[in-house]
Length: 327
Ligand SMILES: Cc1cc2nc3c(=O)[nH]c(=O)nc-3n(C[C@H](O)[C@H](O)[C@H](O)COP(=O)(O)OP(=O)(O)OC[C@H]3O[C@@H](n4cnc5c(N)ncnc54)[C@H](O)[C@@H]3O)c2cc1C
Image 1: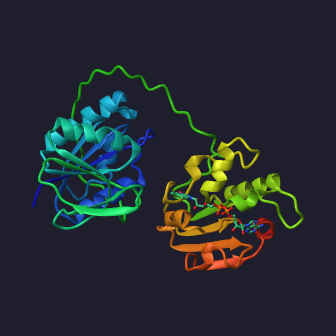
Image 2: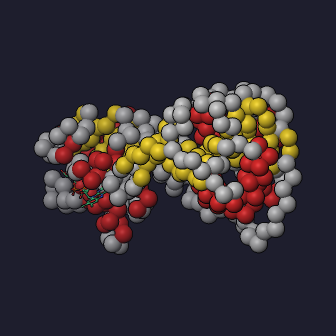
Image 3: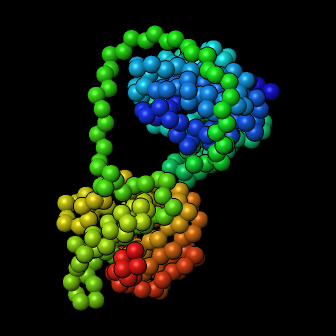
C-alpha cells in the first residue's frame, strides 16, 4: 500500500473545519496515514484528531495563520517532504484549492480537484463541468494530491492521539493579508450547511391575480423565511438576470444564488422551489437535493413531470404568508 498523508488546515480561529474530519475518514478506509496540519493553533488541532495517524506534523506561527498562497504552499511542501507520502489527501477548501496545485508542481507530482469518491485501489471519482459529468481516473505521477470536495464524504469522530512534530518553515512573503470583506451575517443568504434550500423563481416578480406586481412583498416574504429558518437561498436564472439588468426586482439576489446548469448544484437535505417553472436547465442543479418540493400555480409546470417529489399547486404568496404566521 502506498504511503498516505492527510493534509489539513485550521480556520483563522484555530479550529479544524468539518471537512477536515471527512478527509481523515476518507483516508482511514484506504490505509495507514500520516497527518499534517497547517495554520493557527495547528499543533493542538493536529493532536485533537491524531488517534489513527502514524506520524503527525504541524506548521504554525503568525505567518501561517492566514490564508496566503506563498505561506500555505511552503508549509504544505515542507510537510509533504517530511512525510514522504506518495498520495496526499487534502480538504478541497478555497484555501487549499488555491495553494496545493502549485505544491504538486514544486514536488514534480500531480493534483486532482473536486474528488467525490475514492476506491480502495486509488481510482478517484471527480466532477467536471460544474458537476455535470463524473470521471473515474488514476494516475502514475507521485506525489499525487487529491483535493476532496467538502460534504462528499462521511466524517470521522475526532479522536485525540500523539502530539505533532513541529516543522519550522521559512518563507519570504510580499503579500500582506489585511482582512476580509464579507457581507453582514444577516445579509448572508447562501448557507451551504443549511438543511433547506429555498429557491425563488421569476414568478415572484410577475403580475399576479389582481393584475399588479407585488415585488416588495415578495422580497419581504422570501427574506423573512430564509432568516427565520436559517435556510439557504437559491434562485432561477431568469430572476437573477432580471436583477442584473437593473430592474427593481429582488436586490439581495446575485448570480452566486443561481442554481442550475450554468449555476450551482448545492447539497441540502430538502429543497422548496417557489414561483419557478422547473425547466430542465434549472432542475439539473437540484441533483443533490434529497427531497424536492415546489409551489406553482400551474399544475402542468415542469415540476409536475417527475422533477419534484411533491408539487403544491398553489399561490406562493398565500403559502409563504401562512408559513410566516406558523414561524
Ligand atoms: C444553456 C442554458 C442554460 C441555463 N442555465 C440555467 C441555470 O443554470 N439555472 C436556471 O435557473 N435556469 C437556467 N436556464 C434557463 C431556464 O431554461 C429557464 O428559463 C429558467 O430557469 C426559468 O426561470 P423561472 O422558472 O424562474 O421563470 P419562468 O419560466 O418565468 O417561470 C415562472 C413560474 O412562476 C409561476 N408563478 C407565477 N406566479 C406564481 C405564484 N403567485 N405562485 C406560484 N407560482 C407562480 C408561473 O406559473 C411560472 O411557472 C438555462 C437555459 C439555457 C438555454
